[in-house]
Image 1 (cartoon, rainbow, N blue to C red):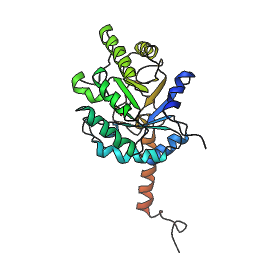
Image 2: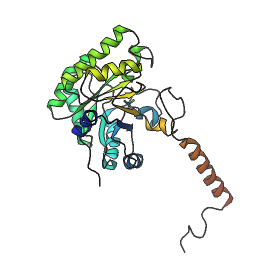
Image 3: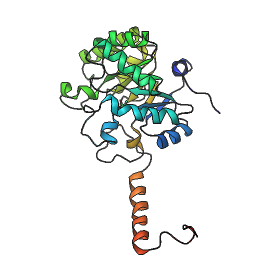
Image 4: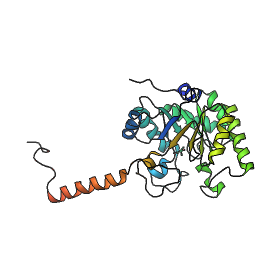
Length: 266
Ligand code: KIV
C-alpha cells in the first residue's frame, strides 16, 4: 500500500518540481475511486453546497453540514491528503471561531483546513497553525466574497489588483499557510505569485504556471451540468451514462424483465 500523504509531502511536490493533482470530494465512494486513481489532495470543498445540496452559492453551508462529509472522505482516502474547507462565517467572526471550527474539521478526519482571504486573516492563520492544524489559503475569486466582488469575476486584471494579490500571498505564507489555492486569475499573474512564495500554489482557472491544479469533481465528470466555467475540462459525461443506465432500469422494471430468476432467491 502507498504511504498516506501529509503536509510535508505536499510541500515536497514543489521542491522537486512535481505538479500536485487535486480534486474535490464529498462522499466515501467517489473519494475511494479518486484516491485509487492517484489524486494527491482531496478537498472537501464548500462547493458541495452547490453541487450536492443544490444551493445557488456556497454561502448557506454550515460547519455541521460539512463535517459528516469530511469524515466520509477521510475514511476513503488511503493515500490522498484531505483538506476540509471552512464554511462561510465559521471562521470570519473571530480568531477563536477559526480555531474552534478548524478543530472540528480535524476531529472529523481532515488533515488540514482551507480558508478564503488575505492579509485580514493573518491572525486567524497564525492561531490555527499554532493550534497544530495546517492551513491552506485561498485567494483570487473567493466565492464566499461573491457579493463584495459583485459576481464571479476574473480577479487581478490591473496592476493594482495584481500587486494586492501577490502581497496577500506573501502575507499568508508569513502567517504559516502550507499552500494557497488561486481561483480565476490571469495565467501570468499565477506565475508571479508562484515565484513570490515558496509554498505550492494550486490553481483553479489560474492557468498553467501553478504548482498544481484543482477542479470540482462533479464538473470534471459531467455530474454538474447546469453551467461549465471556461476553466473546466470535462473528462467524462457521467450525466449521460446515469440517465441512460437508469432509463434502462426503469424500462426493465416496467416490462417485468427485472428481476430475473437469477436475481431472485429460491
Ligand atoms: O469549494 C471548493 O470546491 C473550492 C475549490 C474551488 C478550490 O474551494
